[in-house]
Amino acid sequence: MNQKAPRSTSPPGDQPGGDDRPTTHSTSSVQPLLYTLADLAEALRISRRHAERLIAGGRLPKPDIRLGRAVRWRVGTIQAWLEAGGEI
Image 1 (cartoon, rainbow, N blue to C red):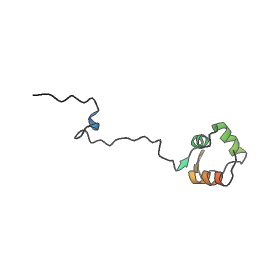
Image 2 (cartoon, one colour):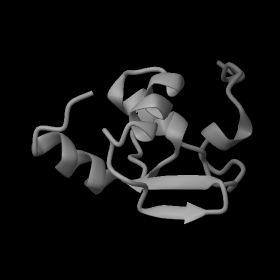
Image 3 (cartoon, rainbow, N blue to C red):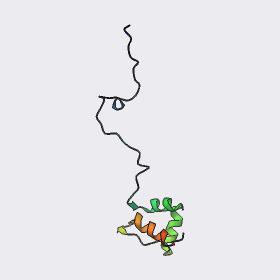
């Protein structure tokens, strides 16, 4: 009655008593605090170029943060703008 347990093929970190490295989690459920232009376009479901045109035409809120040519919008700014009837 001396049977061996089957060997596990899972990585060492998945086994009890295995490696103690922190596990990585998918970031898909993490909401950003700031939008880049690409993030903003994706959130609004428009192309980046269309977002650029809306900005140039003054139809999107001004960026909350500007560092040189890098611009960022707070997520709350965009949400408030949409709730107030902002149109794309």
